[in-house]
Length: 222
Image (cartoon, rainbow, N blue to C red; front, side, top):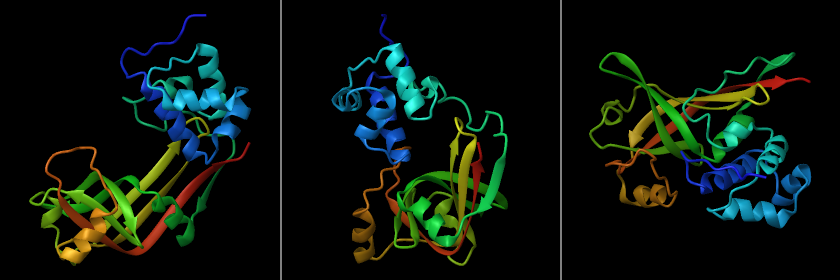
């Protein structure tokens, strides 16, 4: 059988996407291997070997086990917005309590800091991590974020869309934001290991002190 190749992405991208999706579902290698009907050591090999090229049948088994499309595993959806699939037959929109909201934020990731700049609303995507109940991210020292007054209300939004299941959640944190200047606090936030994907001169840390958390989740009943 012909092996699948993906000319537009590194071979290791498939393994990284498998591992990432497995983590999202909170499944072990053994659990995913059982779902896919393959040996755990082979799944571990796929995740850890950049040159691995799984066969089409293997990709199909993994896509079913991970509740994701083969196209997603291969990175074919990178240039498209999430949420294009049809709604589930019986969707339920439910409110998420504070504890659940904090649970979704706890792992960090990419979110959007929302503020006003020059009289217009701005939503800036940033890599973030949590320090206690505060959102920490890095940005430019002289960028739009640094011009936001310490008393100005600021929001921070994080969401996750599952196209395969037509489900998702969204958390909105509201509070105020200040740059981290004190030496002791800088050491504390540096230890979080935040690495902005955008690169560049983003050496200033910002702390969003959260005063309110709200969230919604769509559950698809099948």
